[in-house]
Length: 106
Image (tube, rainbow, N blue to C red; front, side):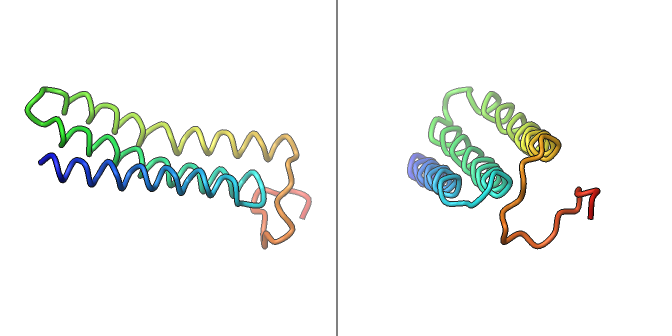
């Protein structure tokens, strides 16, 4: 169980790193938000699952499940709210973007 927990924690850490790299490499705020949210949601879930499995004899699995549920519910909602606020504030898409479904001037 300790090996499985360590591997899941390592995989989660790798996804968190890739999410941070995506935030640095993406061209505009909307792409950065998408890269950061997707990678950090799955990375955090894997990381917490690895911690829960690695410490299985102790009664922390219930706390880990509550944290995972919280992450699943709040990460996409907060990302959507931030992207919508950025769009309403007038932050433009990058030139390579094909279509803006929320643009009312088109």
